[in-house]
Length: 123
Image 1 (tube, helix red, strand yellow):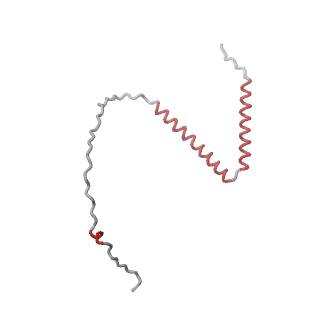
Image 2 (cartoon, helix red, strand yellow):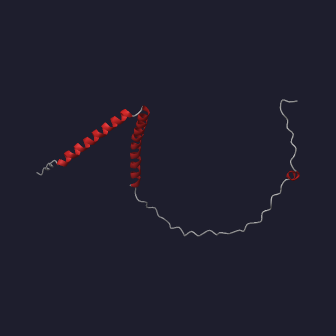
Image 3 (cartoon, helix red, strand yellow):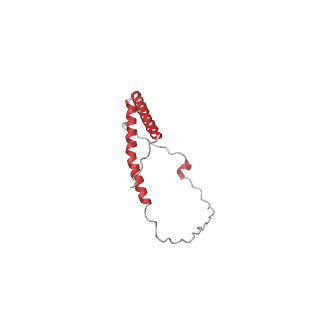
């Protein structure tokens, strides 16, 4: 019978665990010190950002899973009919026509017209 041989523990595994724990402890300590110095408004903003990121992660993973599933579909087996080459449309250049000049109304030629105003409330 062939039993799997246990792998000897490497010294690097212990170092990785210590490094990860040290980095986590440093991050928690830094966050606690920073949180004590921030105002309530700033803490509320940070909490909102954290909740937004937390809500976005599952949504992103769901979108990623759906797009990967759609990419694994069967290849397109429909028959493609080649299109004839398109031709350039005919371009016709029409020279500009002489436009007649607009004429002014007769009242503008005689001068301003006297206007009569009525003030409400006066006799």
